Length: 65
Image (cartoon, rainbow, N blue to C red; front, side):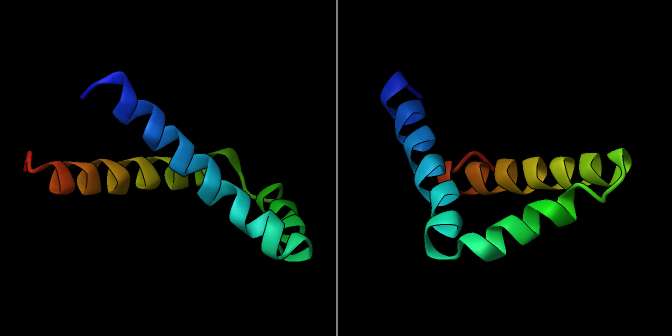
């Protein structure tokens, strides 16, 4: 992997992160308010699950697994 791949991945991340607030700002705001009600353990679990799914997808796409 080179820097171009990393920058392309980061750019795609920013595009995807910007979709919901652009398309539906009210629902995005409501979602953020719901996140503030979660306990730390719940947020950590969601973060860990997201990382594992992302890593698995990356390994699958890159042919490493």
